[in-house]
Length: 351
Ligand code: SAH
Image: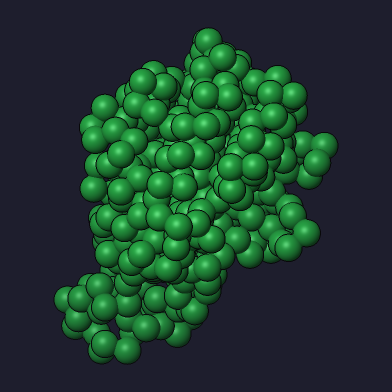
């Protein structure tokens, strides 16, 4: 079966021509899919015989919402069932400047970060472009909010699912699909080897968030085992390349874990590390301190609020632009992968 919702117009053209139909049908079908039809019968300008053939050869699945939680601050967390019964999460957050959906890029994750719920049980499979697109479209419907921004910051490591993520970005940006501008999209990555450079070479205008979490290898190795490949030095080198190549800014994410990465020494190393990236890049760099969400079965605890403030002040004094992220959806398990983790306890992954 073809995953037709993940296809570009020129790829649909190949199916159409295989069926002996004229090429312009591909544009018509692409537009219908972009408009979000859930059956081929809705494609009223497509001949019946072609519609029947498409039904036989193409998958047109729409994810089922298994759970919807609304937090007191309006954050909506959604658990979706995919065609193979695997489950993923999306979160809709409302800000003054519009509504943002946080989407997953994989079922599970193989990065193994010690503080993260999404990586328990490892990677099950990559999400297709259409499964990412559907999260944007149907999260908006379910939350009854118009989505203006996307962050790829849910379950999974997007650069470990590179081709599908790039395909998703092209589709979601397309005027016949959702038409969301690249500058309204952020991608968050732990920085697996080669990923950030490859992304830079795509020349997209998206914003990059890098899950740094520690300024030195000893600390980052404990938190993020993938750091063992190349270490912080390689990661920063990749980030420098990204800024120079795209001219886009990077937001460094730093979760504050009590007694792990939150000392004055860590703050000072972080200042040295980021100031060392190059003075011309400093306007493009920004640190986002995130209060850690405690995850069941993990020894990591959030830093005390006073420690977070002191850390933020130290960074600012050191010349680093710093914000402390507002916690959203704290009362509804909105931390990465927590809903899916609970569901897995009752219903295992489909591998
Ligand atoms: N794999 C990508 C994107 C998914 S994780 C990445 O690593 O960036 C999205 C963000 O949530 C990352 O910054 C991640 O470190 C953070 N995160 C994971 N578990 C968390 C927790 N328990 N508390 C707070 N942030 C967490």
